[in-house]
Picture 1: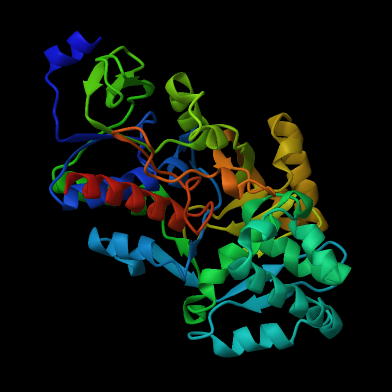
Picture 2 (picture 1 turned 90 degrees about the vertical axis):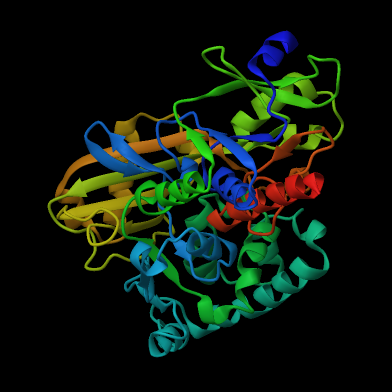
Length: 459
């Protein structure tokens, strides 16, 4: 095999990046911006990875229900450097709703203290029919202790579930169900007892000094279309190369008697040489690529034991909009984690179009599409949206087992750094060590850290 690579001609300056999600694209952009030779290999026929959209049996779908958080820093800077206008890519939401089946009224909370200060203030002080002042007050010691521990003892905080931490600090049941659950399970779709307290507080901690940026943006089209494809085009304009439909099956390592990466092998048997490889695939695929050569390596063993978790998203078209506005809504107390009407933003041209993230994916992942759809309908009816359900014309279930690392207690210590002890091998993905967990911002940070390691090596 070494001879075959030699015949192909080794390009000492080439970096191969496996995966064209945000982690791989951000890494590539930083490298080509410094004049480095980069080849991205993507298994899918489109770029975007977990922030992708595609046509599935005649219906436009997305990988999940995604929103852009206003206090992100590196993602917006990256997109602006790539020439992408955020005002064209996003529509900013000013409020969110929380609907609970046992509540007579739904809660409506302001999101934007700068552009909608009255709505934000009234949301905090009002909604007393949805959550009482006493229940709100029970959140204060919980939040104060959580953010303090997140800074002073993150390892210990990661060893306890969010549910246990909330109970230790006296959070009332109604506050737990109507505030804590939407802000945790509604975002990362795990039950409170399976969710690390550190992951919860760590996600919101960076937003505290940037509270003026605390808002949510809906995409004005599918994320491949409005974000990832333009970013890929900017990479190609700077000299980078991107190949889709190019699944990598193995890393080429040690075949020439050295301890460094030599390149990759594709599913069709093609060998592509490189002296640096960035594994930026999803967590499960990354683990599979690394296991062949590094399963006994002490550095990799914690990461190889890091669990992935499933995800289940329901997306449907209807004759009527599900909601009067395209905004983020949460459905605690049901299988509905978070959802939004999208016929006015992401999927325009349809009378009704919604995406829903379901909670309890471990329980749902192996159910049939029909069973998942039936549970989704029940959840929507339970939170007062029966009229929208009755007008549905088509639906798709988007599910998977490989895209997310499980943010369960004790898993933070298993997340690897981007620079590995193997010469020429780097990792990028939101499962790697960075402070924004399983978010788009986290993916970008991971790619930038991997690129920084490569650039440091080159100097």
